[in-house]
Length: 325
Image 1 (spheres, rainbow, N blue to C red):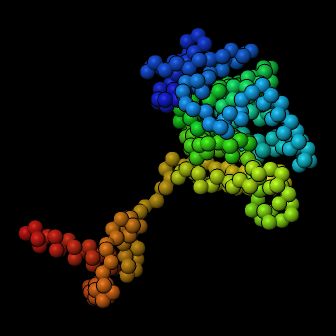
Image 2 (spheres, one colour; image 1 turned 120 degrees about the horizontal axis):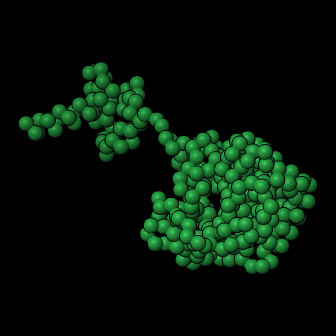
Image 3 (cartoon, helix red, strand yellow; image 1 turned 90 degrees about the vertical axis):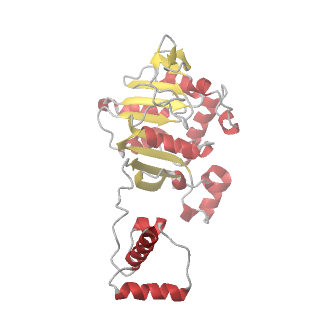
């Protein structure tokens, strides 16, 4: 799996010692962490770090996040490993699949994939904006027998070429993203047409929000008021499925992409008096005329056995031809 320059996405990076470089001279430093050589794309981006992203730095971050997850799964009376396993099982992962986990956090999803799906020989990739998180993940994955690659980068500017992954997965965190639509667009860009994007995050199911249960949950954690990012899905998202998990406090959004979408014929002419096609009805609208003129035009069209669209087109073409003669 090659990395691509975050500035010129069509330029693959080549490795020289502990750095990645592109033909334009951009250099991305790498940090050796046990068996992992971890690219630091966040340094190359040279951008201002948002307030939300500052939450993802600090030596105590891994402990805080681990404590939150422990509370979360005990509250919902389920095993963290079994929950993550059940999510991956529903994806029907193929042997040798390339799997990207964005916002990989402490590496929990990568560990489950590595430990419980070893017979599939998956090729695992994890990224996070936090160097603390990625370094911690590297330590936990040191003994993994699967192929694993890690990097520090912004999920809204993924350092990969187009259509490199069979599955792109994200669990927890996207509600914090300052560029949520861009992150979803990037996940869609790097997944293959036959692949799948799966996003899970806090978001209470709508039918529960006015119940006492729902109000208790929303009072406990304001993030559970978040809505699934349906409006941020790209145009070519297909087979979209929205459900809820963990006592209906987390939405699960999954979809694939169709590079040919929308594959429709906009020029099929309607049968009927109005006539026209989807394209001409949208792009060929004229300024309004008096109602009696509209009715006169329709009567003329009917008398000639034409649709309104055909009559107007013929009338305009005739008038233009006469003036050009």
